[in-house]
Image 1: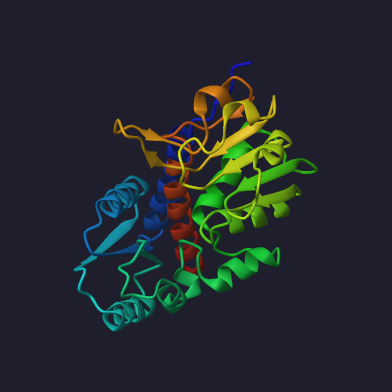
Image 2 (image 1 turned 90 degrees about the vertical axis):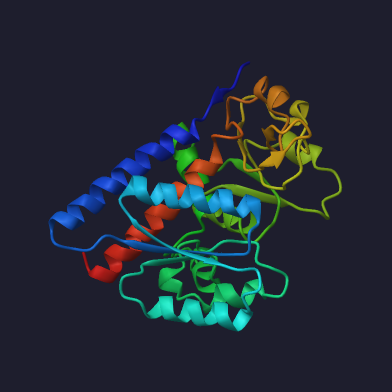
Length: 285
């Protein structure tokens, strides 16, 4: 069996084109363009790449991107002050603080300072809580993007065994909540899970978000399953690789996401979608 690739880049491009059409329709009706404030503290090279991709996506989607590139020396109080001013800014519909933050800034405190209605990353406890209660508003971008990839394949998680490897607040935990919302029977594996192989072998839908290259061996993958690899790792030769042994898994799965070009573009597309929806709510459109 050779798995079919799930082209996240192409699917994300369709989402961004649809978002752009909706934005241009707003502008034609005399409404302003949605505004996204992107905050980066310090000069982390990986963060700089991610931020650049998000700003590029804003341009492609017809959104206004407002850059706030702050020095590493920015204090927690200064960052809070900026966020509070953006919370009050009527032209800003979404606030994104690029993570990770420098060690002298408390990440959870910063996330909670963002107005939940402008938390387009979907990290605020209010938004995660809404998802847990099955009444989602703004949804965490990566898990939301994964649900769209699953929809694209046409495989319903309802009644299927869905295994999530990784329990981070950004991906693993909200991913499990999204799968529950879709009717899946969900198992979450984490750093205290002794042996991953039995769980992987029983997974109809496998989602891996650990950040360790090759942690999932290809021969563990259940034949005919759907494999979503959220991992993004730099191999010694400089290539980007996922958390799953792609070659081995491709011989057993029915569907699989590539790295790069799978989940990453969908995360950014959902950020654009969240910002648009925030603007539509704010403008009553």
